[in-house]
Image (tube, rainbow, N blue to C red; front, side):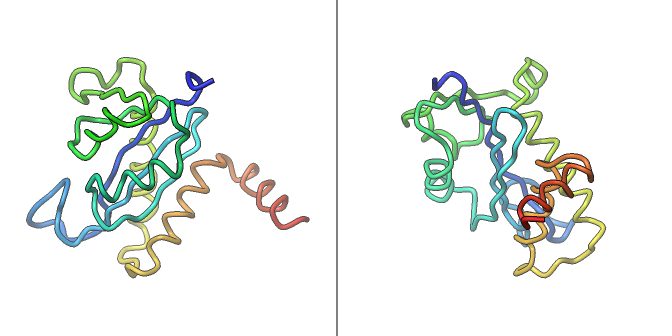
Length: 157
């Protein structure tokens, strides 16, 4: 059954000042780790950093052993090569469109979340995880009609 469990893993950086260092480790940014499960559901979590020791406990808690995990070539994912997961690296430049929609899908989530959160212009750091969970909900439950239906079910209405 493990062959059915395929997930894309990635991290992204939100907020902070535009000047200075960009990308991984950029100062003043909130680090978010995400995974996209087969079928298009995303899970995102604010983390202290993108180190292996920070990410692996989240991965082990959220992903069943023997799952296929797709990542980019970031060094923090090296531990997956010797873990109980089946690890496939996607080289963004050479293989981005090679049919592995797991990495593309999580990139779609990052783009959507950043577009939504940019509108709020300066979310307090302590509130950021709640705004992120709203983006996760919107991504996972598609249309407004589906979102409303889901919320009504959860509320018992």
